[in-house]
Image 1 (tube, helix red, strand yellow):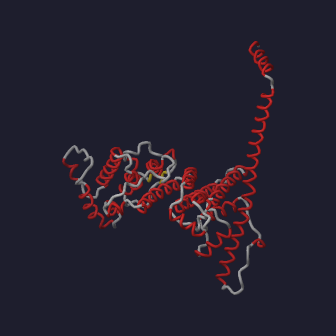
Image 2: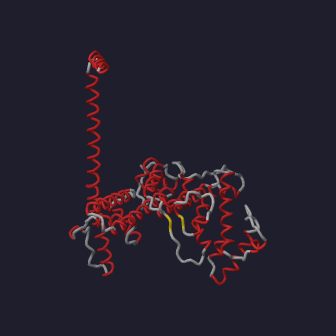
Image 3: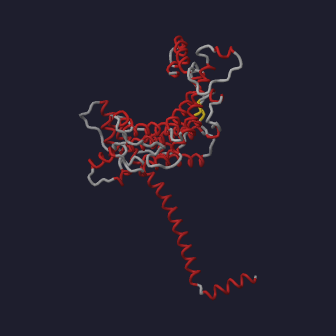
Amino acid sequence: MLLYAIYQASKNRHCFEAEALHLVSRNWFAEPVTENEEELNWKYGSRDRRWEVLVDIVSALVFCRKEKALFHRSVFRHAQAILWAPVVYSPDVKTYPLFTAPEDAVAQTNTLSNIFRCGIHVNAAKIVMDSLFDKKRAQLCATWMSSRSHRAFEELNTSEKKFDSVRLKYISARIELLRVCRDHVSLETFFSWANACPPDLPSLYFVTALDSAASRQNHFRQNLLEDRGFLRHVKRLCTMAIADVVLYQLRNAKGKEEASDEIQNTVLNGILKRAYSCFLKLNCTVENVKNWLEKTGEESFIELDALLCSFDEVGGKVSESEVLECPGEDLEADDAMNKQAMNKKLALLESALTRCKTMFSRRRNRRESDEENVDTNTEVHARTESDVSPSKRHKKVERLVED
């Protein structure tokens, strides 16, 4: 109600705010302490009155979680209140500073201090939302379905579809907060959690309809461009967020011209590896990408853009002879140009996948060979020790003790 009033035009906002504050102020959770009568007669729509209302709402939400620790709705609304705080205090400001770095996070988020007036503290909202994702769970977030009821409305409210929509709202909010904070490590971790979950029934029905040999165990190999269901949507949100972080890191790396060429190449290779890993999470081939682009009419998608842009920065290119196919002569000029652009993009994707596989698999093989050498040396050392007779080993120990 208060947010709706704030978003009205400035010439009409006063009336909407007056009504909203009149309704909200009738039921304070903790009524503000006033020293004189003048403070009781705040002008309706003033920023101080709006701020006191928002502080009171956050205090009530925190109290709800103290009374009932599993009250997940209060967590979501608390994070929303932190993000809306500067807008509520100063609705006429066009832009607000964004605080995303972990070192800038506010230590105390249970109370809405005045520091939240000056900007949008996404890092603080992320800390609040993390309480729903504090550990790995089968349902991904700390929400549970209540017991079945015989009443029609309660049955509808506790249905599985309602449950999925609620937890998807929380999951989407957290993924968006991680994306804005550029926390790709947490995004990778959350993707692994989603990948380890058993598939939901709509996704399982869709997969088995395409392939009768599919099962609940191999859902993590399904094509995320074509798959359906709750888990597919969650995993796709993760890959899109990771790709957005990769593009952000790529822009930052390009802007640092003072870095040496060696450091620049190391950073760009790391970004390319992250983009390659993100694209592999889609479990799609070049042919799948081609079919999806033709089916949807889209020019690209963000995971593909992240991989191709990163590949281009490290010097990747494709020759004209490597284009997959040439457009037919019966196509119109615009269609022919679009077809040619898509073929070049697909050829560049094929080249990027081949080079990345060569680059990063070689490093993995080298690391695995080093680990095997260490295991072999350890085994030989253990075998040598075991070949020594007990009497010789006993004399060796006595000699060490005497020394």
